[in-house]
Length: 161
Image 1: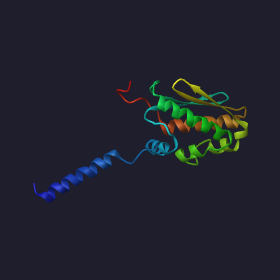
Image 2: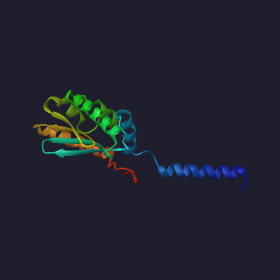
Image 3: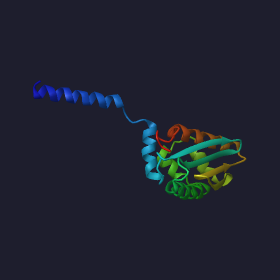
Image 4: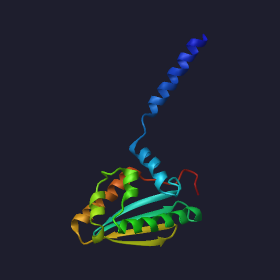
């Protein structure tokens, strides 16, 4: 095969391979932005957002219970986030998910009406959001659903103990 034809075939295959992968998904984009905001390793931790009748529970845990580095990073980050959320500062979620994230504006505006508690849990930390305001409960549920949709269900990689 002539060199020019080999280059054309190789280039064509490379272009086709790139097209097959497609553009990055929203989850890929969110994960990339998340790495600039969250200090822990997204591939070694799991996020969970659970709606409750009066709000939402956010839990972040290390995929391995003995991963003390990740556990420390999770706890440090969530302590700071809980403090910011109490003040109505939802800048970090906006940086990751965009300023139009469902529930975000309502939560920032209604921060004084949301009780936010922090707790260490085995392998990570929890933030508990509670309110008696039905519109803020709805905002928390929308916010948690958007988080789950954007982050997907992150599980430990195959072969991870």
